Image (cartoon, rainbow, N blue to C red; front, top):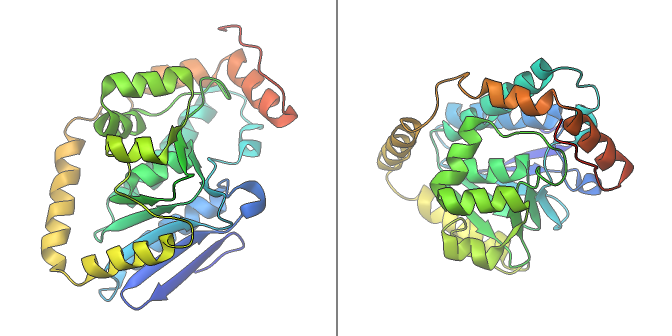
Length: 261
């Protein structure tokens, strides 16, 4: 189940999926998203697997978002709607994995990478790790309603809006204080800490854990928009000249010039 840019391993009762594209800070291609979906399916099929761990290779990034090159071909609002729908399908599948999931975060978790980390049940980060969705100062696109809901649930509305309006990143210590991160461990210890946490969870009653996880998901889901209620706002951003400028500026490594159009 491993691919060119992912490694999938079974270690006793633990499944470990590593996003292995360190030269691009593990920026996600659709092949990598598909590998995440495949891992979710395998974890649910195999009763011997009790916990799924997600991690990034290289030590400098968990996931630095979606590979921006994939946005260069966008020509219409529908392209943006389809991208957000497809990403929502991946994140929803990750949320629905019946076993506990742990994001092992070293370095940056940005954009889609931040969303993936937030979809996991628990997060363990190294002190230098950061979390953020800086699209207001980089691409000029929009989050889906479900992704906004996850961030609002963890941060509260005021902190969420401050984070999105400023495009800043939250450092691990602040993220821990806010409840975004469950534990912090140094780079030399994070593998051990994550595996000890996962092994402890794996030793507990699996049906109890499954029930608590699913009850939590259902309760949170009741607060979400119906599919399509965010479409007008996604179209507003992805159909804009600002979005095309944001992508071009990112590729060209220059500051974008926003026009509000």
